[in-house]
Image 1: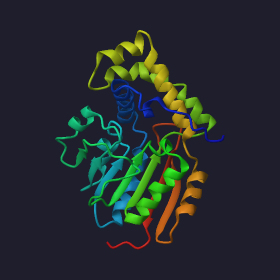
Image 2 (image 1 turned 30 degrees about the vertical axis):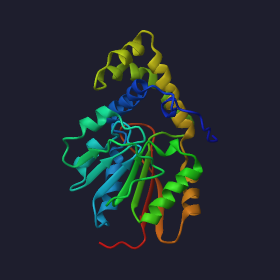
Image 3 (image 1 turned 60 degrees about the horizontal axis):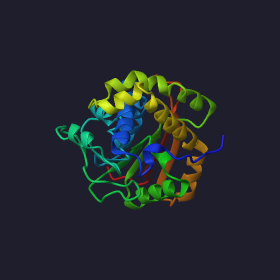
Image 4 (image 1 turned 30 degrees about the horizontal axis):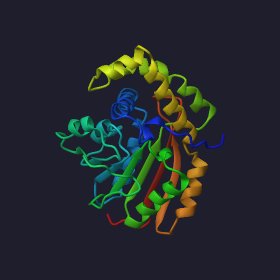
Length: 256
């Protein structure tokens, strides 16, 4: 199945803030309930085991992603979340966490801020970037000498497309659990059911834009500068039928 770079509503500059927040809020709620990224903890733990520092910059964080649950499994790790359009409620939600914070200013994954970060992570975000931009991010990680881990819970396959058919039902079930609860998204979930259709479209577009393991391996070969080691693997999770695709990079020489 060839990659189709369909436009996602959430990515559009014309997308109203309330709609973007409703869509990312739904994704956050599903992530917290289903835990599709639970299988990534051992990979992250292994990366930190060979690292001299434990500061993480998470890129394209949306409403927070899986870090709220993962951080308790990684002792001593401190995570800074960021996004090109940071939701105000997400910034407020994390402001009292001791090892987890959300930057209030816009941050592009193509231009990560300077800082004392030891690792960059991206969850469900790599497919938003074209091939040249994905390799640009990878090259920048190499240039700065930070560890890198990107994870995708969607799959560009018949099974992945089939899973998207469940999205409207999940929206109907999950939207009342999205916090903060807002009237307009709730109304447009049921009367009429506009949000289930819009979120399904973005889910389908994400699936058809997702890179395969072979494509990511090709990117790794093309950006390889000899000082960095890239690997791609599929992580099986008990929470769903679709494996999580992991792109991991680290410097060859590590000062422990």
